[in-house]
Image (cartoon, rainbow, N blue to C red; front, side):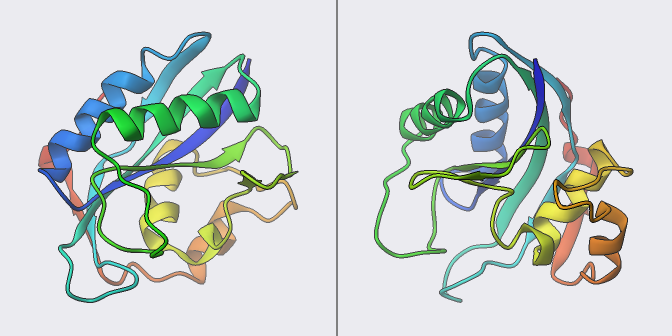
Length: 166
């Protein structure tokens, strides 16, 4: 079993409900255990400004799946919750599930790059992740705390009343 961190995001079709549904589905993935879930955060969207704010979270999974098997499971969850993949990056979506870290692996496949690109500069990824593993080090040795120091908590709002537990 390897510890994997997943980033969750939604800004369409009742985002909090989308994330709760996704978390329930994560707990049903074969050979995988949902170990922990961060608080929910509201964040300003990347990309087109004329879209609703996102609700984001992070989850820790322990899995016996390969990275691509897990990716397939995550994409099946996205599709089951109405995700439509478009060419437009950073547009509105019902659900986005990203593999942020897969143990200490570095993965560079056509379908999957881990650590997730640009996670080091995204507050909506780093702050939920820090709730789960504040002493985490990325595969290149950088401590998560050093990334947080360079990534202000701007445009982010923690929603503690919406906290979800596994």
